[in-house]
Structure formats: structure tokens, C-alpha cells
Image 1 (cartoon, rainbow, N blue to C red):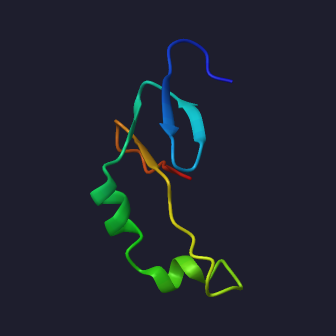
Image 2 (cartoon, rainbow, N blue to C red):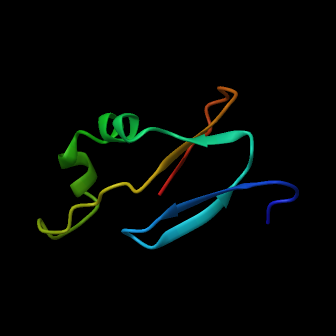
Image 3 (cartoon, helix red, strand yellow):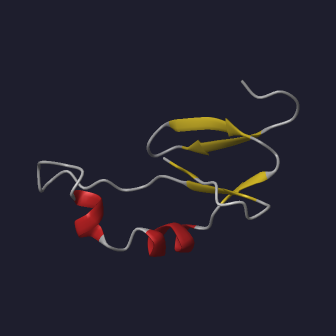
Length: 71
């Protein structure tokens, strides 16, 4: 549960939404795509070649402390 003000992420295509703290931000699609450009690594999580796992969003804290959140 978030206390205080939070931001909301909404992805209409996947119908995913979530709240995140105000001291975090959603990365650009270019950043997320470059982070996950190695599709063989991403797809290794699936036992079916047709099931590609594609990230919807990546979040990082505004202060660089090494934390991240990817969905």
C-alpha cells in the first residue's frame, strides 16, 4: 500500500495498471526496448517458442540506488 501521493501507470493494450511512488518514473519505451533487446534471454522464460515475453513497463527511482521494477 502506498501512503501519500502516488502516480498511476495504465497500459490500455495489456489492461495493466498500477500505482507507483512519486520518487520513481516510468522509463521510455526506447530504454525498455534496449534493455530487453536480447529476445533469446527473454524467451528463455517460456517453454513455447510462440510465447514471447515482452515487458510492458520498466520503472526506476529518481535517485540511482540500484532498485528497479519491471512488469
